[in-house]
Image (cartoon, rainbow, N blue to C red; front, side, top):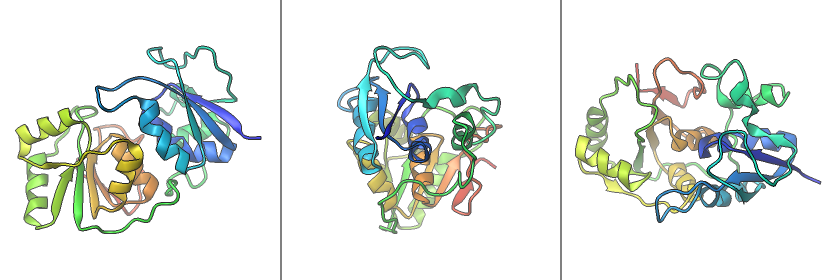
Length: 235
């Protein structure tokens, strides 16, 4: 019989938890049903299809509560314990999760999203959020201009409001609507490379083993894989 996990974290944290749940033999997770702006549903609906492909069934629980606060559910593992580990902000989240769950942090930076074929579909993906950008030195207009000059198609994925801001600041770019994180994973898997900051697209690219160029938050290393397919734009 499989184990049950729960998380009050964001979508990136939960995706980082996939290899941890696999090792703990977790096949069910409770996710807070925090809602996005329409038509994007909730964290639960965004994650459920992708987690299903990884052998983990997602169930919603009450949203709007603080971290590590749950109501009316029983579970074996709390995936948010890593937040109280002394390495937060320095050690990669997956590695911190391993230590918080008393697992040896072996193979912590290898691809962990199974069942996807990575290939070059002759397009680039940009996924740029407004979070985690304090102190960034990246000139995103230059990044975007260089991609356009390559002659290869460039798409923006994410929320419409982030796309609108990008267009105003750096130039018009075609928006690729993805209904949930499974669709985003498929789209990233087919890209030549991902250009992003520390959002969920980075987590997906690391899980796939995809080539990515990231605007990492200054002085933070908790999302760095230090692998050959990782490139730091903020240097």
